Image (tube, rainbow, N blue to C red; front, side):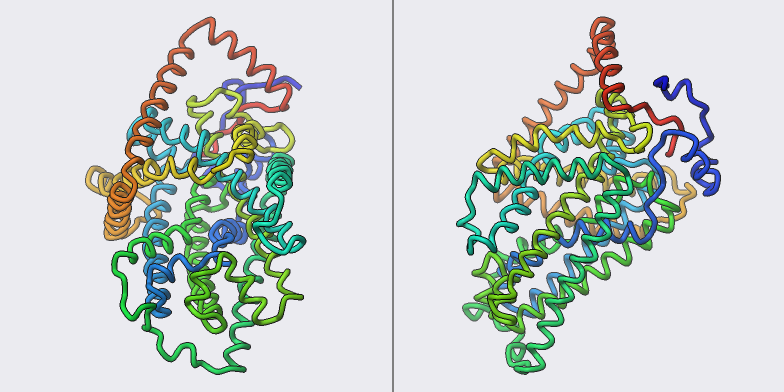
Length: 500
């Protein structure tokens, strides 16, 4: 088969593709594009699958520590954190429907502030955030898969964990490169298991309360030590906010969402509502069985909970749930982040090969593979958290810059026709929260300023060097030769029909 480029392919109008559902299906069958295969059910499974990670099973005590052990204050913090996260979701839905491109923050920063800033963001994701996150999640999967066989987390051999994590990482890549539907079906199944596990915890808590009464809830505002430590409240709010922040992954794949103006809004509403209710009830179930002191001291709250309720013999069920939960997070992040890299390639911020799609599987194979070499290196590193924390401050700054786009557009384009507009208080609340988070991060960890500045400088140098090589005839000839070889190797071409 001849490898064509977008210039040689018949181009349909963007309006036809976006608005005519039947026409878009015909174009997807006739041409090589990323298909719109994410409906409401898959949308909800993606968001829930990314929000419900291992935290609710292992360490929900972060919020409890911040509330000084008070049950009522902890639940209130969960609710406020979920509401703040929802304001961010509202803002990003408006931007997603305005720009109509996958890629999330990369697209918004590139289109509004210029390609250089977009490159700084996507470079930090492809070099640090994505591979380090993949490595960490792969390690978690294997560590807790082996834990029931050795008795304790700390007793698992490190070499076995890292070797297993390498296999898990490659398995996630294999699933995502085989077909666009494989990872989505896998995500639906794993999300079903995750929700079922949380519901099981809730049911066990209800049974425990029915049998033993509600004595543990008689003093809901009682704190450890007799008084509330106000200095710990900010960390509790940040913990609750990040725990329910998985909605941002969906924004990266909007071009593959059916009827995005309806699906995005409904999916966000259903997912965030379900998550808030499930997390609140699960924490109440923990409180019904464990004391606040026990929860704050444990690194595996759900496992301790299961031992108390059903005994050691059946507590392995919780470890299985942790493994499947982490696997869902790994699968979902691999699927969504690859679309950001694909869009960066399409915007000529990355080499041409990253913007290609497999001819028959309709997946961005090169974009999926892109962070894998670094992920495998990070798996064998000693301290992945230190690597991830390097980009914390940069991520907050980028969120602030993205949020500022909404009030600016309201001022400059008050009459723009959108199917959804966020209420003006939403970006204000989300902006104030991120500014508070930025201030707290700078105060508690001033070294982040140096790391962030270094990342920006190195990324900008890389951006201008890459742009210079693009204008060089000799470098262009070498790049074209490499791209041609990789296209044939991966059996991929550029998308033939614009989907944005």
